[in-house]
Length: 272
Image (cartoon, rainbow, N blue to C red; front, side, top):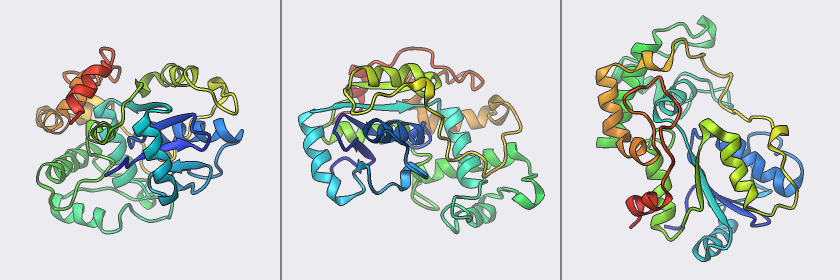
């Protein structure tokens, strides 16, 4: 099985388990910069040089050996489940992707047909009922995760604990998991624990939000999208994320964590 979704700097200063929609573009660019003194020109997810990635065959034995021996500091980052699923909806379902097309080709037509979702388009300035469409998308996301239909679940809306657990199950151990709501503080902890070829000053690092600007803007506060049924579905899908990563399930409007992450608890609950 190995370590899918795992990135490592070429200098092997640090290992990172990617969790989609949790600042992975910014984290990847910081890792790239810490080795090379420059940022990757483009979306770091597309980089095929300058970073070791499990998706690249040549990197796999290096990542495998490092993680199993726990040679380097290993970390990941998490996000409030309410804002994460909303971000997935606006980016992946409503947005036009970097290649100028809809995400996953026939996915949006399928959602329009089977779930009655509207997504708008750049031509009508993305004018549609965001709340009604999002709630229908949430039902679809639940169906993919619980019943694997009408398709397999997508990495952008599967649970964070699901992503994070594969690393533990296959023999890895995290040294740090931080909330992206306090990104600089969490990332600084990582930088304080590692030696990098190039020093990183977080205050001077831009934010890399690769999903921004190619879809509609969220028109309402977070809590407006979640009625009782939506919250019920969120608990069904992301109960473990709320509990392990200390987010406020009762109040979708509170994106801040309500406690510190207990690493021992995470390893125990998500381990083999």
